[in-house]
Amino acid sequence: MIYVLDTNVILYFLRGRLAEPLPAGDYLVSVITEIELLSYASIPPDDEQLILEFLAAATLTNLSPATRTAAIQLRRQHRLKLPDAVIAGTALAMDAELLTNDVRLARIPELRCRQVRLKP
Image (cartoon, rainbow, N blue to C red; front, side, top):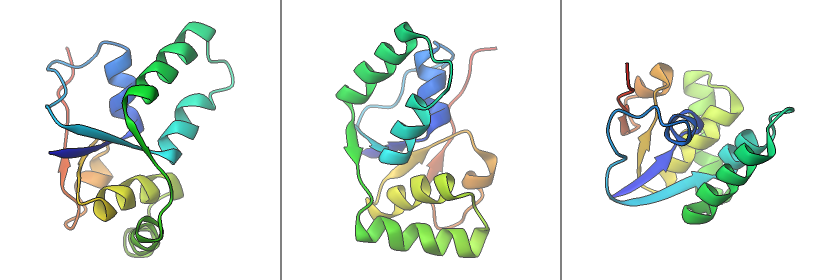
């Protein structure tokens, strides 16, 4: 199975907040997620290193024509913020399931989404 990881799921994983392991499969990370993860103004060096190690183990996806087209359609139809549209568009273009806890993305009918359970 192929999964696209939303930024929130990666942060939950890195902070040890997942109640269950991520499902087995291949993980894709949008270039937008990479930018979101590494652009926090006051990111501690240890956290940055942890993020870089995680990203090195995943497959980074760029903005392919199919991703751009899907993102444009999602943004038009569902009025998504640009980062969310690109991440969701990546999942559609790659025929992957999106792992996200973003309720708005989970409501998009054409998008296969799965939420992750968090520790109490």
